[in-house]
Image 1: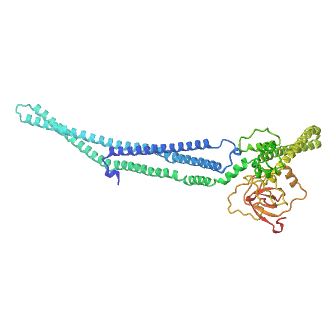
Image 2: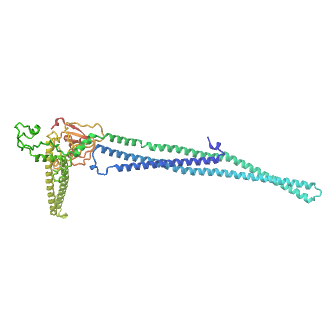
Image 3: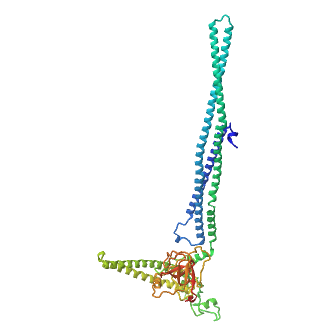
Length: 563
């Protein structure tokens, strides 16, 4: 239905309606602005919340409990969720609010132009009507004047007393007025015809065209509102898949909580390695008293205690027993402060083993630095000997001697700490606190443990094929002794090949003693996994090292199994 034909006389109402349409569009734009402000504030508050509860300490110092790791995973997912809320706000700002504000300005300019055209057409029609009305009024006046002159002429012409000149003058005046009335009539007729023509054009051409433009403008405004309503919903719907993944990540983190693993970590972190204290012996203070009764007097000493004390003739040492008991009482009370010793003998066995292993690793790194420095100085010395103009080779000798002296000191320290470590491991092995591998033909580097810190004895793995291609979790990093690697890798007789493997994933090999492998790379197997998650392999180039067992597909030669 067209506005031009149905609403030809409703110019003022259409003016108000189009203004209302623009006001409504701007009101919706204001709503979108407040909505995206809410999203931005929500995302900001979520990020501040994540930052507040994120760990402040380095990752190495954070607890390794699955409950803590799952909570940190939830924080990461919540941070990603906050990012998606920011995406929603940006989409609304650019594709809805910004578009509406630009379109509102265009609508205002277009509406102003159409209304100005309508007012101009109305003003021109009013001008034509005024011209026609003026000519009409003039024609009316001229007719009245002509009638008056006609009455005056007829009166003088019938008056016998009137002079001839007076009659002639009245006659001329009558003819003049009649002529002017005729001219006014012609002018009025012309103006009336012109006004009728312009009025027809106004209501049949100009106004319908202007109202048609206003109708198109209003309909486009309605369409634009529908499009922005859809964009408003699409901005929210686009992030639903990623938001769902964030929520799924939170659920997965919740499922990853393992109470048994956390309990194992607590045990590995705090166990001392000491045996529980034994029973207190019975201390008989009546043996020095004179017995007045018969020899069959029943002793107050319990039979079980007499048996443990070696019979009636043995006398326990009260001081020794009390001292021995006091040495273990601290396990159930406040631990006495002990001086810090170089061999960490003041610590429980398990804690002592960890501290010694840590010190050996640090000394090994320092030794490696000194060895690299020695090699660099020797190369520089060779260059100076071949090119004396570059420098004096003898000037490097003091530095080389100092480096060698430092290396000897570090080796001595490493040997001393390894001796203490062997002593601790020997004591723990005698108590059954540690399980060794049953294979005596292969040597396992020190420190090769599973992520939980416990050793495993599964050596039956011959062919390992993962069920899916998602990157598996890396095992605990191997931490072997540098001298042990030197002895194994620099041997004149390399280990025989017992199979081959294909890399399922790439591995960066950042830890000492590990290999850098690429996906689909083929390597030779020279030592099987001892249950710690690492397999020793050799590259095509001859480089040897350890790779994660779960990262490779292993095929062992049947005739080499167990060699």
